Image (cartoon, rainbow, N blue to C red; front, side):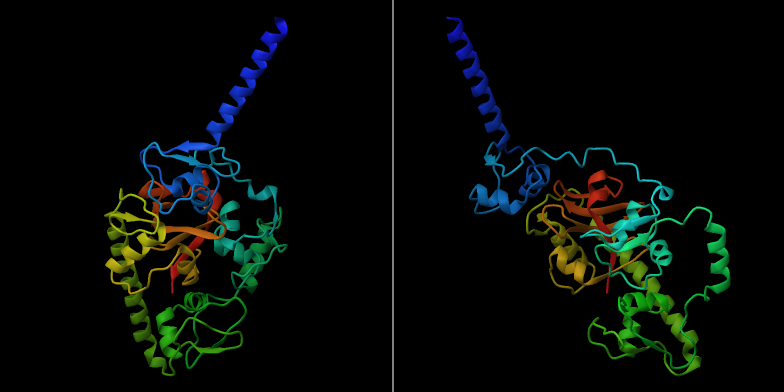
Length: 350
């Protein structure tokens, strides 16, 4: 009799374990669920969920049961408190890992992109795994470094008078050259008859017209361009904010539902841009990094629901951005542990 009771108890335990496993392998769709949201929640991809459940579209029904591939324990990244950043003095160097970007390294070490580049004497954004960067000044060297800077640092870059020429170096971009010489990408392309943003190492670029008397008019034009860009950014953000609350829809690019890149395309189109509809990687390839982001710039994220660049939004200032996330169009904070972990950098369209 005692043996029989033990067998019954063991069978009950086994049955309970199987029931728990079955429950962990499935998700019952609730109101507001999307494939994108579930992929993030269960640390998998939309493609894997679609394939495992033989779905023919991204439409989900309430109470629909979905099998979840792989390790299906829900990720809690977004709800965990952000880990405090290590003090700069505790680690004076950082070794680059695969997938790192300068912007991400700077954010992790509470530095600006400019400070990181200046500290390591970098002229471009190209980095390689295994590369070692300084991420804090050595103890006791601050005064010496400041003195050295005050003696040997050249004055702020500006294009000398006359017909100035710049020779392209490794890592250069039109955006970086334009910022360095206080001009715009548009002016550089017009002056050098460029039809695209492609530049080659060793290529010589004119920076100014021959006549010195054009300096004031060039400065006036640059000022007008800056004002125009500021006005354009304001209109982009004003347009973007109209759609807060619009639901997320995979592949969506209209106010009935947006995905992240569809939201960017629609807002840009409504504010006069003729840029085509691209994925987040496509917009990433058509923009350049900025170390001092302005409202209206782009903010990119990587390794969210897939490897590589996979999400983007508009920067609105105060460390916040507006984007089409899993809960629809919303304003989020870069201080959130999930977004901080997947942050790639700030960029601006060419």
